[in-house]
Image 1 (tube, rainbow, N blue to C red):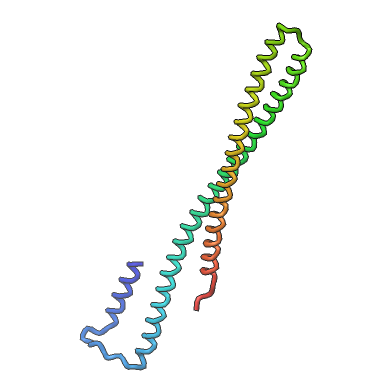
Image 2 (cartoon, rainbow, N blue to C red):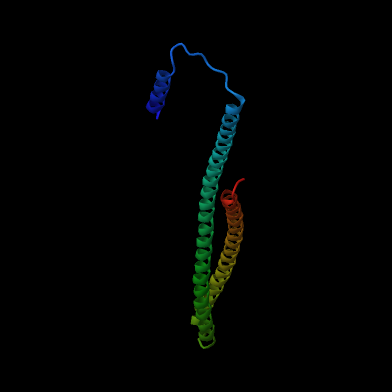
Length: 175
């Protein structure tokens, strides 16, 4: 483009007589030039605004993508917590069933094996207490993950609304 401009300048200079002086521009010739200059200024402003909007759009799109990743990460955390709760609940059910069988067997056993069964019953009760604490901890983790998801989804919705507003602003016809 630089070569073309320089060629046009050289061609224009070749057409102007060497001794010619600048002639004063008539008022009637000045009006169209002023109108063209004003139009060029308006076009420049519009292009600058569009460039700024494009940059903002890219930034918002990047934020939206990052926020979407956070939402997905929170959803994965919830799924993991739910799976851990299910696993711990099944383990607790098995322990309860074993405890019940041991209690029934304890009632039918002679004294010497009875003390061994009592120790087993106490161990099973301790296991159940541990499993209760683990389930409580896992439920707390699930609750925290659900709160995190809700927060990330709200942020995502806000960013999406801003981006949608920006798109509407760009799409709106300018005077």
